[in-house]
Length: 111
Length: 111
Image (cartoon, rainbow over all chains, first blue to last red; front, side, top):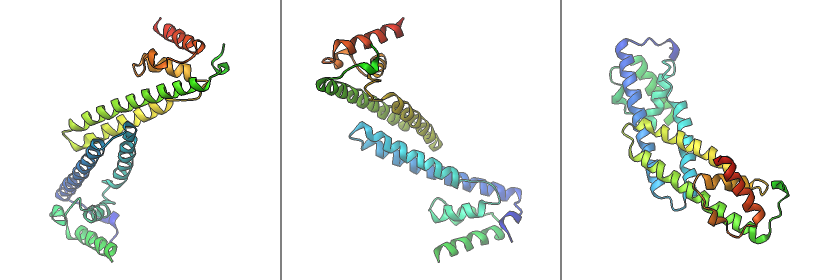
């Protein structure tokens, strides 16, 4: 089955949205922590632009990664699990069709 | 006399460079302080992008403002004095031709 052919029930959409938002907030919090630590270590004020570089790159990266189009979600969740922003348990409530795609993605990327 | 016709002695260039760098560091330090305070006040991690917006705008603005081309320096110093990043005393050692241009700029902008 192709990802774009998956049917998502209302409760699956809710599970997906919740997991998606949880991962996004977790990743944003990590970015907040890193930026805070970078700023705390600044010895020359010009180094503020390193923080700007960092935040600019993270924004681009997260904007690209957090794509809630349903046809993309299995890929997005695979990546979020790989990167540690989500656990498979956060996806409890998704149908086996979606979970299998995600597990297959994880296997392929690990091999 | 036009700005681009000004002649700058070695010691004037040194004074200009020192004043320019002093203002730049002062402004960067103010940006560091503001970013630090913004980050400290974040309650929702998504607000990190407001800090990114702020730093992005400040970088653009300072990159445009801190132009060390000698033909631009009197205008740059006028602006830095107006904005409080420099005092006229920081420019001690510049010739009267430059100081008069800067003072004239300040008068025009105040009127």
